[in-house]
Image (cartoon, one colour):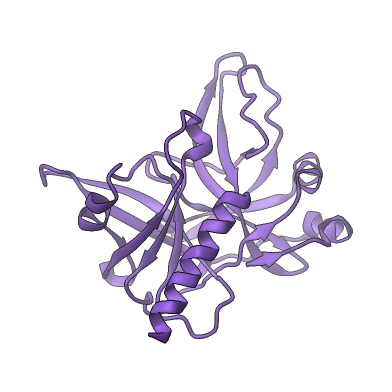
Length: 244
């Protein structure tokens, strides 16, 4: 993970940069599929492949949303898998997510550890960790970001946007963006560039229709300390398994 404490001085570079093009796992995007309890349909969502900075890992850490996953961890490990290139399935062996505390979208995330490393051309993208003041400057500057959309074979350029619309007081964990997204895109990484390097700023959660604006607001979630601690715990678990 990348702790970018110098973001205040690097902000001009962020605002002027463009996130590199790419598609699929080349930009840290994967998908998670879960078969329903009756086995009749699959629930599909997306995930961000995290570069944890560990040397020679044998497993992958995936960040995604929780709202498409079974609530029971055993059922999640049994019925869900991470899907890589050529539809290869990777078993989920460990899960980190917050206990339900009635906090709605604040707790809508999960960190998954796969049984083995994803194959082929896979990019693992480090997390961008910044403070609230730096986040605000990024939003006010409308910095360019990207949301990878594998099914169209390319990314779509978009920007961060303010959420000061009626009914959108979602808290400091969230940000708005202009990336076009549809059902099934939840969990996709929102990518930003700092000094020419690509980072995961957050993940896409979903959309909220703003009646007063007659428009849809796309909502992302920052990687806050709780998510970062879960990513660190997953990386530690994977490293420990490798050394045993």
